Structure formats: structure tokens, C-alpha cells
Length: 435
Ligand SMILES: [Zn+2]
Image (cartoon, rainbow, N blue to C red; front, side, top):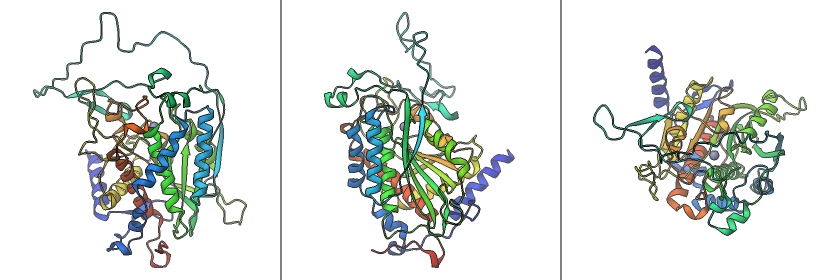
């Protein structure tokens, strides 16, 4: 139990000090509380520049490319559009990671059991509990999670005809082919420590014959909105911030894998020597955003889910408890939780230990890494809480402002936490904000 005691003690430390800033070594060290009074608080000023309308406009723009499935023209067009948008919001130093994606053809193999079997569907599991409850533990989920309650079906739709909207069907007709892929990022250069950076990411590819609105237009638009706000002409940050829109997440985080493989060893290298330029600043942390808007609660016994955002909806900040950087990642997660407690306008945030199935997994053993989501990826998404996930329902018309607002609140969380982590807390190096 000794380890557990230490775990709790470090939580208390985070809770008491509230926020952390990166030290010279990149380690997280306590920072002073933010200035009292909104007009003196540069973070509050930045958060106020996020609006529901701007977030929705950016997200709607992404829907013109259908599900943006990797290996298609609609995916390449989306990468080009994202790059143009980043440049339009003054994140002009865009760059591309180029890589090959050539998976072997799928072995047809034996037909998979999809639940239907001879003699009809399997009997429902007995979920009664030893304490007399009717519905309890329901097995394991991804990332080391435990699922409770009823599950609903999950899977990727590949059937064009399952999409009832003819316009969206037509957007998604092309099938992927092997070959070259690319993904785009841009960077806010730090004023005093340009050689260090946080990476803020989301994946721009999707699938399922839809508009990939929630998975992951919602995270992509969030990252692009933060790129807009941090690159405003009156904003300076001490350390650098990179805005990365991964490709090929849905095929197994291959785009993030290519980034790590190509860039990891370039960290902190000044190039050309003496130039003061660092093509790959040293990574201080990686923050991923994947599926940001739908928190409608657990499936009912018949597998259906409420059409309404539940009153208890929250932003789920996850780290991976069995990763090499678990302790530092947990601390980073609680920095984000504290920022949410201060700046989120509509929904709170919660921290969990099962970050899984998204691009931040590629960073989790190298640098503190967290993901922000609408639900716990393992227990909730894995248990079928989101009926739009990889289905024809992931289209613009499915979502209401209550859903879009949850994505906006995740943007508030990351914007405020990164603001606190990247601005200087010394008087001489304050974030420059002139209204
Ligand atoms: Zn996703």
C-alpha cells in the first residue's frame, strides 16, 4: 500500500498548489496562483476569445470533406484546407510530415461472428451483483478499464447505403488506396524558450460514411481555434506551442507514429547552429483531443441512448497509468483539471487513468501525455455510450448546441491550462495582452 499512499500524497500536493509550470528542465513545478480580478488575468482574456459560433464555424467547415477517410482525395483536400485555415489565423509556419501507408490487403479469413449465431442471438449476460443489484460489472474495456452497466453495439460502418443522406453518400464514395500520406502542423514560437514546446493535437481523419463531426472534427476544430487565439498579434508565450492535426489515427495512429519516428531525435537541436531556431523544440507534454461533444449517458437495457446531453456531462482528462511517464502525466492531468475548475463556463472536468486508443499513446512513454474527451475512452466509449461513433450518425444535424458547448468547454480547459503553462509568471515576462 506504500505506493498508493505516495499517489494520494502527490494528488494533495497538486490540489494545494493548483498549477504547475515547466521548469528549465521541463519538469513540472508549482506556480503561483493566478492574479485575482479578471481584467488582470491574461488567461481569462484568452478564454473570452473562444466563442461557440467560431468553434461551430470551424467544425462546419471540416464537414465539406465528408468523413475525411485517409488515402482518399477528400482526406488530402481536408489537409490542404486545414493548412490554409492555420495560415489564415497567423499560424503561418505550417509544415508537413510525409510518410507511406501501405497495409497488406486484408485477409478475408473466416467470417467474423457479429453476434448473430445459429439459434438466434446469445442470451443477455447475467449482470446481477452479489450485493443484490440488478446491473453491475460488465467486463473489461480498452486501456485497462472496467465496464459497468449495459453495453451497446460498436463497430465501423463500411456500408455506403447505410448513410441515408445522398449528398453525404456521394462525398464518401471513393475508397482509400495505399501510398503517400501527409499531415500538417504549425508552431507558435516561444519568446524566451523557443527550444521547448507543448504539442496540442487532434486527428483530422475519420471514417464511417459520415461527416466525422464528433470523431474527430470536434477535436480538430478545437486545435485550430487554439492556434487562432495563441497566434493573435498581441499574444506572447514564453515557450513554444505546436498545433498538430494527425492523419491516419483511425488505421492505428500511424500519423502520430510517423511524427514520433521522424522528429523524436531532433528535439532541442538548434538548426542551423547559432541561428536561434529549433525545428523540433524539446517536448514538454502532449495533449490530444479526440471525440469532444457527446456525453449522453449509458445505454439503456435495449442498447438505445438518450438524444440529450446529460446534466452530468463533463470533460474527461485521461492519462495512462501503466505508461513510463504515468506520474508526470497524472500531474499534467490535474493541472488541466484545476484550469477547468477555474475557467470552464458550462461543464466540469474529471481525471481518469485509462488514456487509450488515440494519438497521445505514441508519446506516453517519452513525455507527459494526456487526452481530453467527452467520455472515458475505455469504460464509456468502449461500452457503446456514443451511437454516433464511426456510424452514419456522425453528421452535423445529429448534434445540438448542448453538444457543441461540451467541445467548447474542452477548448476552454486546454486553452487556460496551456496559457498558464506557457506564459511567464515573472513580472518582466508577462503574457502581452492589449485589448
Ligand atoms: Zn477518434
